[in-house]
Amino acid sequence: MAEKASESSNSISLNTVDGKIFKVSPTIANQMQTIQSLIKAYDSSRVISLPHVNAFHLSKIIEYLEGKSATTVSAVKEFEAQFMKDLSLKQLKGLLIAVGYLKVNELLELMPKTVAKLIENKSVEFLRKFFGIVNDFTPSEEAKIREEIAWAFDGVDED
Amino acid sequence: MPGKRRKKLKLLNDTITDSRRTATEVKNEKLELQTWSDLPVELLELIFSRLTLDNNIRASAVCKSWNSVATAVRVLNQSPWLMYFPKFGDCYDFYDPVQRNTYSLQLPELSGSRVCYTKDDTIRVSSGMTGENKTLLKTYGLNHHRTSLGSHEEF
Image 1 (cartoon, chains in turn brown, cyan):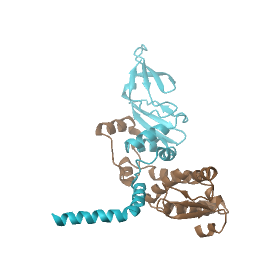
Image 2 (cartoon, chains in turn blue, red):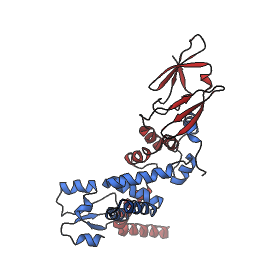
Image 3 (cartoon, chains in turn cyan, brown):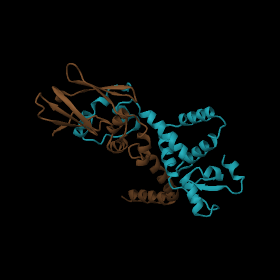
């Protein structure tokens, strides 16, 4: 996809943290708000360095921006579902950070929605284990939270 | 001893030749090492603001950073819940019309009292026939969570 975009003379070069250069069309670049404002601020022929984005994440973002231009609503939905399904939990996190940094609005809709779905109807213990989070509450702090809002802790899926 | 020093020197040498490569690798690894608990707050906000109240509350019990973000994005103007008074006992039901969920709360401190009115995040009840000992029940907000009905203070 990078090759295809480089054919156009006014393509924008993006340099990822792991040193790969991507050439993207202005249409794609402008859907990343951070890049859009950088292009406005600087000469667009310059290579833009992205300190928080690696090649995998940028290639995924470009894949998304190119793929979601499908013709029908249902085709877009299908593409989005497959796109999210292909990501591991670790990739999801890395991509989310990259998307947040580059401000890709559509992915900032889609990705939090996907993560929220993973949180729904799960027990606290499951969530810690699943997301690899260390419980940093003291036992009394946690007991206090659970006591105040005890009703919310019933009726979750089996871990 | 000398052997050890040589080994150390060799290691240093390796480090120098690799320094360019490792700098980017370290940066890359730093990205990878970020955990779900220390995601940028703006991203956690986007996630938690999509959760229903009970899911939001469970997320808030996972760790401190999730707690602060989840409590910050809890919806303040949720539609009101219906509160059902039991004929016997002290188990009160709360019906959330949006989620069509009913939640039950044991509120023994409400026993024998009458609700005078509700306003914002408080329910004012009077206990006993005389109407004395008026108590303000503090909730998370009747238009909101009404979750900590248990904690009350003297009026």
